[in-house]
Length: 516
Image 1 (cartoon, rainbow, N blue to C red):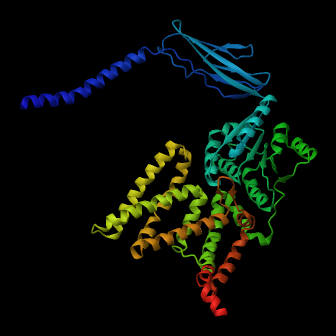
Image 2 (image 1 turned 45 degrees about the vertical axis):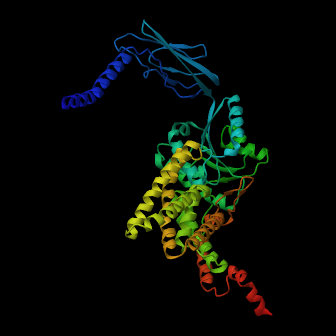
Image 3 (image 1 turned 135 degrees about the vertical axis):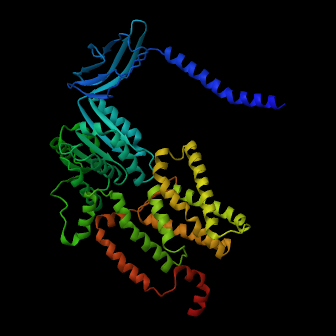
């Protein structure tokens, strides 16, 4: 009996090795039987009258010793031979390039399409609702022999997410930025220009030179705030010119030959525009905070990071107002401020989903953990561990359902983790008070955070419309000196001794009898 068991164990141990050897042999046979495979390595767009490289060195040759011929057909009547060849197109348009390789036994053919252009223009955008319009612009440009390279972050939930995605894509498309004569930035708020500035700072001014290029910023509301934010980027980008105009200027930019031609077209067609250069936006002595903010941008601090620093006092002031004047009870000032900042970075809905998941886990686990004799800190460590597992499940589910993409989650995961740790506040409050009281305070905290989010420029999509209030945000970014006004407002709030708004509603009957 023992011998039979030993034999069975030996068979179980040996079988994987036999399978591995069989797989290795089959793999070797597959490699030996592999076919000739041609591969073309070339850019999808090339400038006319300039030689472009077409490379076939990545093609697969089963036997290195074989003599292989490389035949190129460039689709314009010209042909060539060789592993790596040069070719220049004389006229703009799409061309089919065919590579045929032959080793005397078999033949492989590869076909790609390239666009030969007169001029290249880069469009940086996250305007999801304008995708069809952008495609029409691209088709119209190609009919004129102009290649429009679109660098997009469609579907980004916030300006912060859009900036991160665009910065990464700009790095991948650095060759297009280098070759473009004009760069058009058409994004929500300042995401595109911020991403371009970060890209230039990461690459180094010597690597990507913009001083011979025109940058056109599409902005529907050209005001002091938008001009101020754009002016900050000028010294970082150092372009030939930086022009702010409305959506209609996209066609003018593509049509124009250079900066002077663009200015003539904008004047002739009556477009509203603003030119930003080194002579505009001179700071005055009373704009000392603006000087510091500009210095931070030049030193490489992202504009959105500076925006968060300036908006944090606004958030704190809104929370103080809601507490002292309105009478809403919250988990202090830290918790609603953190929730608001997280909403600004990843969006309100993604933030609410994370927070509700964390609270749900804390609510379900607390009764179970109360039955176990254990110290509070290890209990909270268990709760946060389960919350992390729940977040993993949410990430997997949302990705598979297409609610959030991988790029969004890679950027948003840190704010999501910060929100998940706020479950400790809820669990602690639940231990000290009743479940209903803890729930009411958490709900009040979230409501105050949403109010602060709205007043600091966050968008609230409602399906049929989107609520957005950018006045305070624009005011703070255009005039950062306003931060000192917030100090005065908070001093006044600190002196508040009257009844709060909710107290007036609660005790309205008593107040009515006192007045009588």
